Image (cartoon, rainbow over all chains, first blue to last red; front, side, top):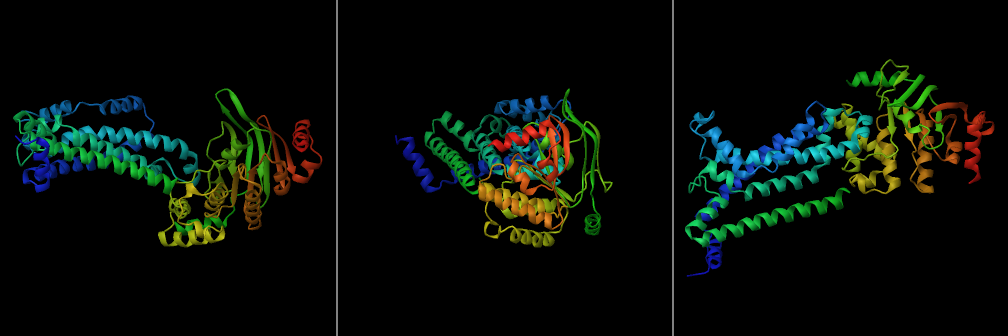
Length: 231
Length: 245
């Protein structure tokens, strides 16, 4: 029997359609979830950094804690919402890519919110008097702080992307690992490994590692060049 | 909006009057019963030892913080008129280009993009910043950063400019450049209110002096009078102590 590594390299080299399809779906789901998380999380996190209201501390702690939410639990929650008997069951979203996007958004959103809050809070401490002096109120400060914190924010968003693309629990529960429909890299690895078809599993594993590696390289390079360019 | 702006800058916002103004944090009175009038067209230097409340006084005048009691009122009835600017002791430059730093307060003030471009170009030229326009502001030298901070404050054409230790961390030639700018602003009719711990700088720049000691304003008046014949023992000690070295 051939070594799974040789099979894996063969599959990657040949551009195996099952392989590329799985990779494409994975990236699509995770990128969508990251985008939605940023759209919601950046303004919300910045708002949380600047706002003062009773119970703020509890919300900050809650979002920090949710960063460690186990993916299977996120998956379970979405499953309960979307299942036939659940409150959103009529939408028939269970076992669709949309359900996977929702589950992953739940995983990434706390990361984006908490990170944004922390970055913007630090910047606000530094910028507060200056911005007030220049005529910017609290609300107007939000886009300013987000933009000036862009380097740290992008690094953190990439971390969120990494978490989502690597997790298996949530997408497996709400996606169902249906071939050609909701099969992602991680769920495929789980399945192929349990079936003993290690070639495809290893091929996906390699791709997944490469994606993680290039993401981290990108984050590092970005931070480095920004330090040089922006000071 | 534009029309309002022209009218606003056509009417003078000065004098600025502080009446029995105090500022406390908790039970500590950091500034106590300050009476001071900032007259138009003068260069006022606020002096005093460290911790006397100089920065605090400027920040209160500029409207960054509110007095605990007493009043701060401008001739213009506006509680915080737009035609005043401040260069903080440690100015915060945005993590953007020099050009973007100059553009930012103009955008906040509601100027249209085209008008802003003109104003920024003029400011860059006025302060010799054109070669640095696209450079990240945070990577400029200390002297260049301070020049940019002054340019940013000047760009809005303030009637009053508050400068908190404008050359505290600079070498002699950069200090000289900043002082030249202050004289030019003054010649343009901008009222200057600044702090300085450097007695020689104060002698060079001051037309009026306000002397703070432990949160109280114990002397004020024309600079010549203050330097030649200080009225209080505290001011005499301060001037004497500084002169020794």
